[in-house]
Image 1 (cartoon, chains in turn yellow, blue):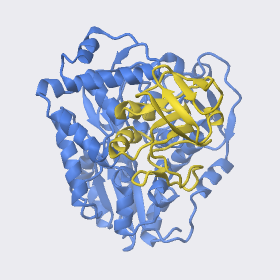
Image 2 (cartoon, helix red, strand yellow):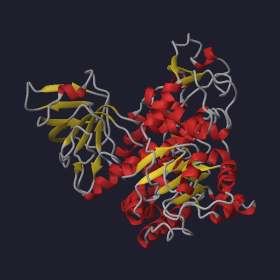
Image 3 (cartoon, rainbow over the protein chains, first blue to last red):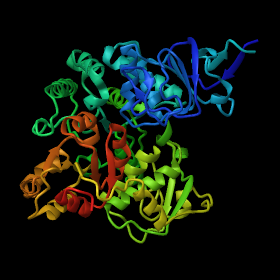
Length: 138
Length: 415
């Protein structure tokens, strides 16, 4: 039986892909080189890693009001994560996901989703059901 | 989520694709945050400088602007946050024609929707101050924290698209700071050292913001010996929001929802206070210290300056000359710029070699590109909010009082 994690119903379409996990936070404005599709802030735990088409699993979202516009810009450029999983997300990035039609879920039943999922895990994210399935482990 | 008839009609598309987009966006956001319904709002304030929107955001706005007038007009008074370019000054700052072109297209699209281009983050001082209990859809985090805390109004941090959606429907999802249960204090800080100038009010906001660290937490600050003025609370709030995502604070005896300590915590006993001391202020300033360094640019901005701050800058630069290798910039709103022109403050600042900008804010104005074009690195400011943000754009920031900032601008280095 694959492992199923339950969360609050989220935003965007259901997707399936590979996880990129860190016990760190996320700011679209300050952490990323959005042209290259890599984490560019040296202090970030995913520094140098490509986020393109990966399912990012992080603690929380940071950053000001400007980031509401940025997920849509990233999605349209094609250089974008496939989905976002957070322990908790701030209002601005959730609004940005709604605007950009980007898959995003948070508020898991488990205390820390960044400890449940490992980098490289194959995940199915179903925002409408509030479910994330780890397909490669049981 | 309960939806009223009008919203259902918008979702069904009977009021056109623009309002259908807005209603759909609000339902997605509202469900995500478990909103029970939508609440009518009195004003919307949109953060949409072109650096944030990017070209795809501009194209999105232009598409809305092509709809028939009745389908695209905003339903409530809607105003804007600072823009990326001051058309009267962009050449002096080495901003490009491309930036100007993008900004002009976006302004045209907003105007087609009936949005008022106020281009300000101090609308609560200069346009129409919110009122206690008034529900709003405000953008800029500094505007939201001031409106919620100092004025007792009710808004979440609304990103540009969400504030725009509220403008088009006249409502916003009722979650977060629209609800009584989120407006109760959760942390208690007691001042053992009181701020002495605007920069220290910002530093205090930074200290409280770092320790609060979260949108859903509400700090309560005690130990004041007087009511702060609007500019002091402006710097405090903007920094608390920037350093900690804080959207609401209470100061018992000062802010309207906290006549006393007990009411700040919703009638529950106040938690034990964390002290804020001299050492906290010293450590905060020390993070940004750079004595002896050459100063490339001195910035008074973030938030935009009030008329009183413009007068203070003018008074400090009178009869002095900014160092030829240092740029001094003072930024205010278009309304205050008019008053500053009329009262001679603009002339006095520019006579010393300073630059006065209107309708922009330093970090929203292509700060990285300006740094590269002008060779700027070391930045000095009295804004704690700005020192927090601007490091992300490749600057080395230092925080000092307005008086010391001007002294350093004249000397060309950090004294």
